[in-house]
Figure 1 (cartoon, helix red, strand yellow):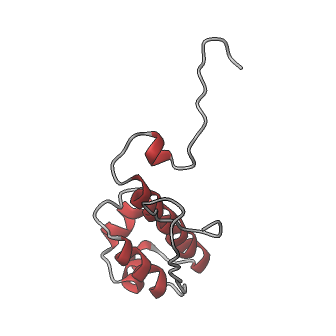
Figure 2 (spheres, rainbow, N blue to C red; figure 1 turned 180 degrees about the vertical axis):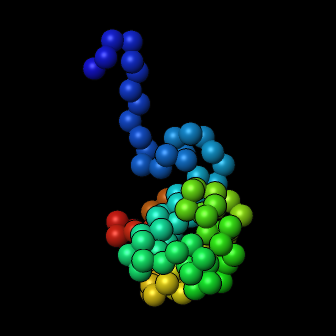
Length: 108
């Protein structure tokens, strides 16, 4: 440990750790964007080709791949993944607490 440096454990959601509103939605959207970016690279698509396949203009693809996805809904991001050849499964179950939460990925 570096003297004078304070370390705080993460909650597992960087957006919540930063105190941002809608942290769970932001975490899900960022996870979807990571998958989209991986798919575009794996398929060897240009941003223009990816935009055509996903049904969004190239500038939105560029912005999304740079982390600007605030203007895209979770539904639109899932539609983009579908158009890139991904299946998406939604799982609903009773919450442990009185208020449920959203999740994405294998741990969910």
